[in-house]
Image (tube, rainbow, N blue to C red; front, side, top):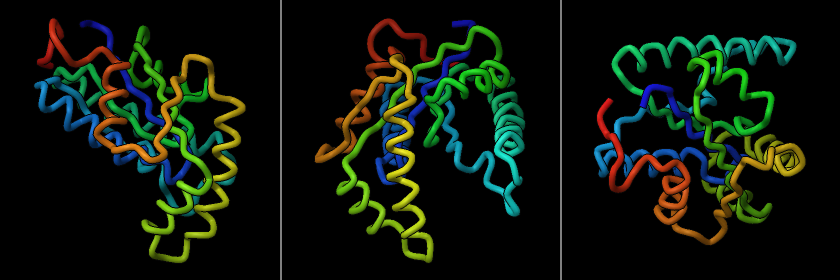
Length: 184
């Protein structure tokens, strides 16, 4: 495998992106598949936030480029990347620039009902951000539903075990199973 590959796991707040991403990593580790994991939320989390969105995207892209370069120098070619809006068409260029031309992109959009997302966020958020997270989750779910490209495979998470969701996601990549190159 010469070109890098990235699995984008996107979805609204409370859908389980981070949890599924770590379970995908656990499955890949159990199959000895070399990979790296990046939670994209941390790539652009700064305060004060840039006033305009292109500046925030630029920070994220610069950080992704630097971190991926470190992984790539050590021979890694597969990346599991979790971030709310990462499957949207405008994100494609960022991954091509950060990981190199010819990067293979697998887009997964995790979905959950408003009730499921609310239940998960209520259980997770302990500080002052709950109402903001709930409103943002609803807004971003609608945005993703409207703008996610056809190549983004929608995977429902309501009422499912995380390991079952992760197995479905791993199967979409073709990274695990017989006849796969596993070492970096």
